[in-house]
Structure formats: structure tokens, C-alpha cells
Length: 411
Image (cartoon, rainbow, N blue to C red):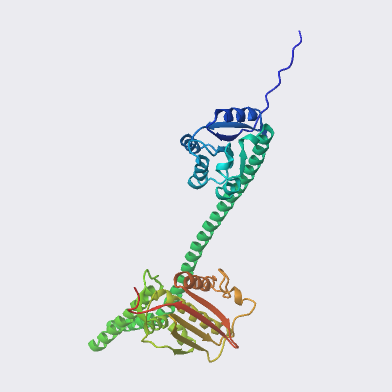
């Protein structure tokens, strides 16, 4: 007796799902027979059969990924295949599955018009679909389907990478805002410490004098009262300074009506001690009565930073007779600030970098390189404006342009 070794079944990687839609049973039988043992890229064919519009819509919504649909045009209606094509492309938003229309009545639907108008991939008459042509159409369609899947996967990966990049940028922006706030708080503390030193010295000295008078039993009621009033006034001055700084650095949640005088007065309350200490002459040109509807604190914060930058440039470069020129005007619904100094300007090699995050020419702790970056970010994203800094012959000029509305003319 002769024994033959049983041939081991080949392992396949899965199936290509193909849907045959036709109201003729013979079409289904022939298609199934031809594709029964068909293999493409180590995958076999799995054929599903439907015979009308309703059953076809149901299976298309079942979650099966069809690579190819053989679709009869004329079934329970002359345009049944076209209805199903629109359902696949428009309702299901499926532009990957390949669709081959088949008809036994080509006169009812001209080939060129169908291909152009209905996003189908091939058009065949049933009489021309021999076994060879059928398998050729299947191979061509499956290759196209594969390529579209790759493109879709690449697009998905790209979208995920873009989404991750956007998320990372948002995280970095939040981190920058947090760091800028820390640097701002350090600056506030430094400014408060500087402005508080003299009043605190006065308070300490006057209280010591009062204690000494008590110890020496040399108390003059009038003098004691005057000294007490002086101490109280100095304490109120310190309290007012705290309120001024907190108000200035608190972000606005809504716009307010404010005059230019109010804005500039608040700005100079913050920077005045530096101006006086460094003997800086300030020239201003603006109409203080102009009233605008704007985010007040944001404008003041930006102006404080620009003025502080100019003052620090004077200090670093030890310029004699320092001056600052501040001009403000309204033109075509835009508020235009220009701040000019004569502190030597900015090195041309770094001029384009001054608005980059973390770039700084300062060496002290305040020099985290976030001030100008956050100022421009605030101007562009929140105030609908522009901020630029350019060199002049012996200094630099900061231009700030912001869209504004006049008081009483906003909705």
C-alpha cells in the first residue's frame, strides 16, 4: 500500500471583503465561483451577497470593511445602483471602498456621465465580465484599496503628530506664561522693596524718636501727634503702593472706559522711582482727555515693560542726560504709542531675536527673556495689535499699535 503525505494547508493573512449587489442569482453564483480560490497578497476573498437597496444599506452599516463592491445599476428601480453609490460616498462618507458598476442595460446609464458624476471606479457591462476580466478588475481594485488605506493611515499618523505638536505648544505657552508671571512677581517685589525702603526708614526713625521721648519722659503732645500722623501717612503710602501694583498686574477680564491720562498716570506710578533715581527726563505728547474702551491693565503692563527696558538700557550703558520721549495718538481707530530712547540701541545681530522666548540681554534674575515675548503675544493675541522695536541713530524706538473704540461708541 502506498501512503501519500497530506498537503499542509497554507496559512493566509486574512480576507478581502467583497460585496456583490445584484438582483440576479446567476450573477452571484458566477462571481462566487470565479473568486472562490482567488488569492491576492496572501489574502483570500470573502464574498457577501445582497439583492436590493434595503439589505445592501443594512450590511454597509454593519461595520464590515469592504474593499470592493460589484454593484448592479438596475434592480428594484432603474437607478438603484446610483442611489447606493450616493449612500456609500455621501451618507457613509466612505471614499476608500472601490465601486464597480455592472449593468445589463447600458443604455439606461451612459458610462462617461456615471463615472464623472458618481465617484465610481469602473463601469462594466455584465456581458463583458469574463472570468479573466473579473479577476483583473478585482486585482486592480484591491491594489487601489491598499494604497488608499496606506494614505489614510499616513494621514491619521500625521494628524496625531500635528495634534500632539499643538498640545505640546499649548503646554509650552502655559509654562512660558507661568514663568513670565514668576519673573513679573520678582520684579514687583524688587520694585516694592525699592519704593518701601525710604518710607520704612522714615517710619522706623520716627518711631525710635517717639520711644526715646517716652523713655526720657520728654513727651510733647503736639509733636507726638504730628509724628504719629506722619507714621500713619507713610503707612498709608505703602498700602497705596501695594494696591497700585496689584491693580496694575491683575489681568482684565473685560474692557473698560479709561482716559489716556489715567493710563499714563498709573504707568508712571510704577516706574517713577526708577526715573527719579536715574535722573531721566521724560517728554510726553498726548491728549490726556481722550477716552477709549480697552483692556486697561494689559496696556499699562506693556508700557511699563517697554519703559523699564529703556531705563535699564540707560543704566547698563551709563548714558549721561538720559531722556525718554513718549507720544500717543489715535488714527483710524487705532491707538498708536511710540517710545523713543537714546540709550545706544540694540545690536543689529540680535535685533530680530529680542521677541524670542527666553532670549535676554540681561544677566540678573529678571532677565528670563520672557517680557518682550509675552508682551508681543499679549498684543497680538488679546489686543488685536502689533508691537515692533527698531533702532534709531543713537537709540531705539518701540512702536505699539492697538485697535480701539472710543468711549460710548462700543456695543
